[in-house]
Length: 172
Image (cartoon, rainbow, N blue to C red; front, side, top):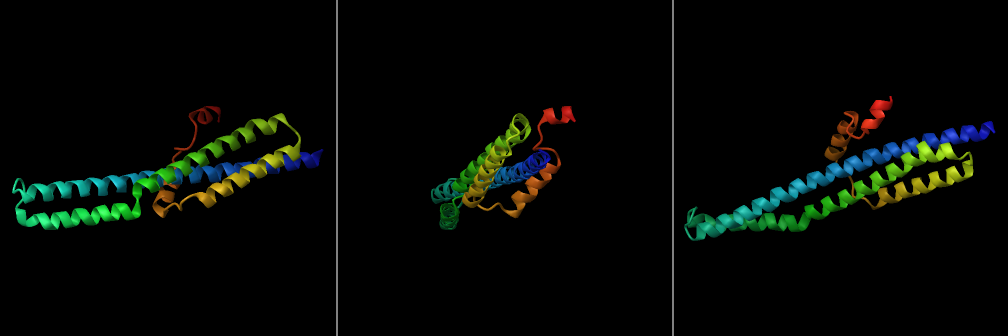
């Protein structure tokens, strides 16, 4: 039975790796979503302000009419950039990926902390671990890439303890 104990330890160790990977991936995707939302707001508000300024300058309301064509042109360029890069869509996709990785991380944590304590059947545990690994691989394949900035923000946040549960700090 010692071999089963060693195998169970290896299963828990691999579950730890999947949980850690999911923590970084989830946080990275959430950071990427936040960055893309900011890009969307900055470009959207800029385009709206330029278009409004162009309209008001045409009537000589706020700005001289000679600036209207330039302001309209800038508003059009920013609107075209918004349409091309689709920051709101990217933010939603990253947010969905982050949520998927968070859900998987939670499932793996429960598996590792509770399910492995309730059964000694290493075949069942190994099968569940493979399912988790396959799910993680699927999420990695389907997710947008995380930018270096989003990764660095995630790494820094995790190192500061942002991904830890308060209850864990009371236990240790």
